[in-house]
Image (cartoon, rainbow, N blue to C red; front, top):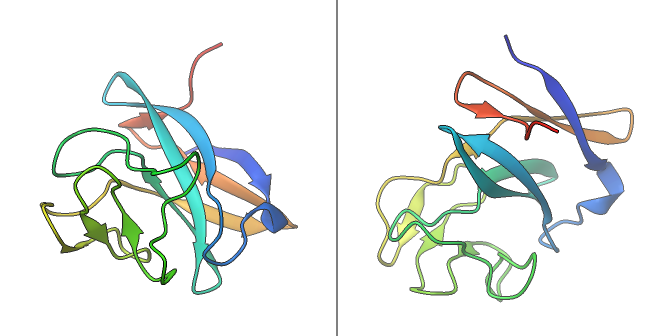
Length: 121
């Protein structure tokens, strides 16, 4: 069963702006994830390039290229579509691991699933 976990205020995600980072347990491993806004909607992915499993941001919480149209891995230049996480160029395979989000009442929530859980406290 999916759980909805508050992530941030909707206003914290500016179109093409800084990401809101958060931690998740994915496949039993603690991972960083990030949420951004693109085409007016919040989007979230694991912060893990499909080329080499390493974090992608070139500066803390910065994922968009200079055009604001692509998510880019700073290490190898892999480029991903912000709306789907699909590889769009460079050394990448497949797509980023997408994390379901909803936005309501001025708050963005992320959704758990069988393979994606919050950190246990």
